[in-house]
Image (cartoon, rainbow, N blue to C red):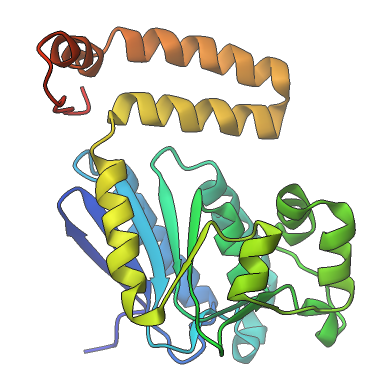
Length: 256
């Protein structure tokens, strides 16, 4: 039986997608198409409230585009850009568990996730290294890196193919937390469980409003926020939240 390109596991309202092409976990066309199928499953599964993305092995989260699959580059490029944009606008929280290097398209993928937790390993680095090959970031790196760290720092990283350690990435705001490598997935999973306890309807409305603001501007974001406020306010989760508050207990949200 062929080895799985991406491993999907669902447990306790949390889906974990592991890129299974070690050691580099690079993206071929086949890997991207398989990843798209996994995204379809978790997006359409009402029981999934949070999604974790991580890489197999200890060396790489993902080294980006698979140069060995260059024959499919005409299809791989647009597919990667499409999927990374989809992740950036995903309406369920996405956590990148950065277990090793994240270069090129790998870093671009982490930039699309809502949260980024990185292994504080001496060997783990992140960077937009495409210019070393005479090419440029093509899956959103010129835009999303600047959004996170500012134009000057993004230009420095891209133009010089600068690689950052976990501590430097934390200082730059590229990751939200760094943890010892042996504790990475425990910490990521613990954080995912806390997110999964939040009201899914309201969480989705917040993510949708923020995405609208980033992609379509402030007025569109505010309009989406108003609509989300109505949807969340009319949900059963809202009724549960107010009832639990009055009864002085923790709410149990069902995503309805």
